[in-house]
Length: 214
Image (cartoon, rainbow, N blue to C red; front, side, top):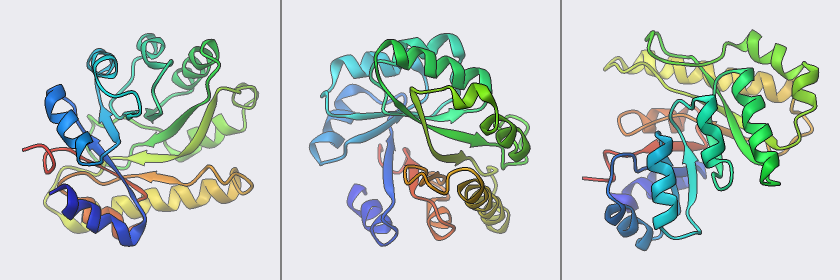
């Protein structure tokens, strides 16, 4: 299945984040041995444990909701945090990254789904953040794109529309705030059940777990 998914991604030049949450270290090692290097976790304690036990060239992505108080545990090694959903959290990540003399890539999470359980910014809040003096003073984070999760539904048109909305948000921010920043390039959207739709709508990074780990 790994080769099938990679084949699907190739025409779009998109990246695969292998979602390894709850999966044993042996399963991750087996996927690593097949050539996969980017893995996504959603719980900090599990991510810390796996980082200590598995090969050091793995690129770990934190894809789940991140509590500010837990940011310090991953600041020394995490490659990308997909789930920045508040100015407070961004400030904490910047502060903790500075302690390790690192710059951490982050994605701004937008609430594009109708489900109340989903977290995320709205566009106006992000524009306010990006125009703030607090953001302009941050030196240890790099906003490299956006992330969103579609509604969990069989309605493919709804999912498509939600992905289109995130792409519009990305395009707007790139034009208004990141026109000179080549690093602002990632749209993290699409999971096991909807990644083909996400790719067609502009995803550069899909988060796939259940299809890979069976």
